[in-house]
Amino acid sequence: MFQTNKTLLAAGATLALMTSINVSADTTLRLLTWGSYAPVKVVDMFEKKYPDIKVEVTFSNNEEMISKLRATRGAGFDLAQPSHDRIHSAQLEYNIYKPLDLSKIELGNVDATLLSGVKANTTIEGNVYSVPHQWGTSGLMVDKTKAPNFKGWGDLCDGQYKGKTSMRLKRTILLGMAFDMGEDPFAAYSDLNKYQSILDKVSDKLIACKANLKAYWKGGDDLSAMMLSGEIVASETWDSTAFKLYEQNKNIVFVPPSTGALAWIDTFTLPRKGKADDAAYKWINFVMSPEIIPMMSASTGAVAAVNGGIELMPAAKREALKAAFSDSDIKNLKFFANIPAGIEDMEGKALEKIKAATSL
Image (cartoon, rainbow, N blue to C red):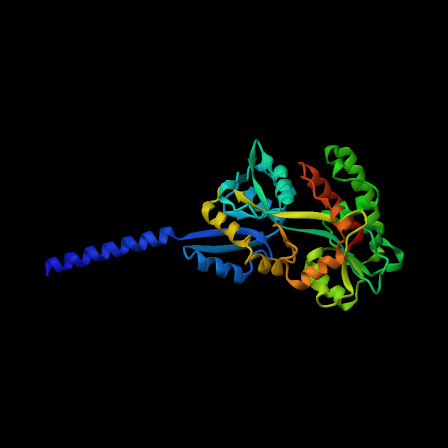
């Protein structure tokens, strides 16, 4: 009896140890990303391929990503997806990221131009902090039957469209309107006095534009509702939102502004105190694989940063993109420049001034 109990106790201890090992081996990949960048189907497929990894998703935006990581000094998440212009300054100021091990990322099919651009933007002391994932643009969405001559940011304030336009009260509209007014805001980043003078001009323009605006939109859903209902005929927008509406109404198109659509690249970046680097690299390689890219682009509406990324988009979104962009439009893209310290505070004050004066 004693021997039997001893054997049972030993077996129980072994089972407990095995259970403990299995639990400790399980990894949680804490992903800090944009809405639609972690579709449920893609997450399920990843967890099926890697049953020892559980994906935990927090949806966010550029400002919130930096704020969350700054508050924890780079802890709490294992993979973040800030835009390419939001990394260099944030890293220098807050030290919230860690360098990538590029040997662990399958870069062979990544678009060389986008990869080179992101590496140039995010290399600090010889270390690369980010690689590209998806790219897209901000510009204009127009119902071409109601505003056929819409071509530039300034047209949002054309008196013939009184009460029929919209925009998001964020930094994109400041930059776009600056270009429309003949300024180069990115070139002025190195001269804060010059940049402030540009912001002052743009603020006055946007305050005077109040009568043209139906509302400021805050998300793709409310913008889409206004466009589809005919409440507005044009808006500042992400191209992906316009592409989705094009599927429902072929009269609603994305229009690259004559001064150039503003182009962004969302990246893969490792938070400094992340605990699941290997899982993060697995996720990067998985979602950039040819079989996953179409599903990801269907969800985001954006273009994967791989060779032939446009051709891998779902047919309807590919059709919308090709209807919007000519080769010259692509060459005229204005990629967001790295944001130096202090710039966003200046822009925030300008946006608060506009909001207070317009009260929409």
